[in-house]
Image (cartoon, rainbow, N blue to C red; front, side):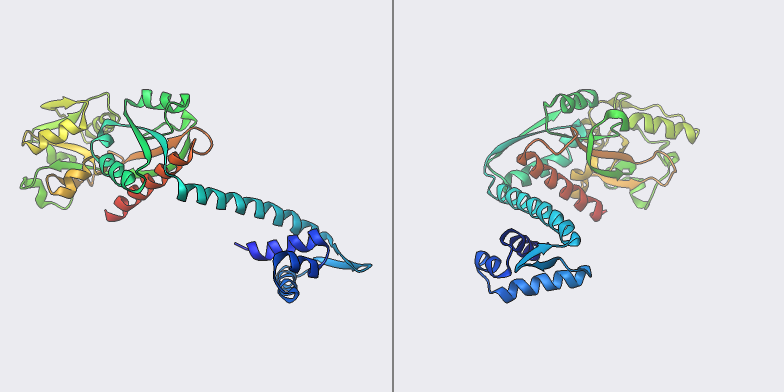
Length: 301
């Protein structure tokens, strides 16, 4: 953010004179001199030497000039990008995500994003993780939001967050009286579990095995939305992370009781894109919106 001093310095180099630089900058020469002197004092070395009435860069000045030109170019690029974002009134962005997030976290995010950017068209794809990663790799979607994306996938990670797993019960259930729960507390209640195809199930199976607990779910489902509906209707209890049931939690329809077992580990949620920045400004805006929403939920606890 040293744009003024660098601009003054670069103009003195270009014109070879403080007076001529001041004329081009529409300021008094003393203002230019003051900026140059302050910069030399800060660096502890002279930037110019006077040769036959003109100013010539010292070796230190040459280094500073290279930095100044690079910084001013980058600063101008940032200003152009900000102007484009502020003036963006149309565009399209495609987000791929899981069914659980599509039915819990994303409806609120999509609504608030559309309210801020009504001219941008949103395309939301609900697909299995394999298809999701392929869509990102092939460029069929701009960004994806998914759990436990393998490090070997080769995508750029834009944001990462950890979401612990807990017991999900309806209001009034005996477990709501506990601040935390153990996996063993689930014994004796009808258990509704994600199907083996979902990324959460192996984590749960491994945790039950470590605790030497044998469970036989009364229902298995590939849809976490369906699982939540079954719990709402009193068909049993389940195990999910807080983000996947946040909508019902905020409405007071379901209660999240954190697990205090060492396992299962939290689910890692990643916002990813192809290597490099998101493909367009609309995607960039959506990424910022998603990150802001996730950070707010993490802070809310």
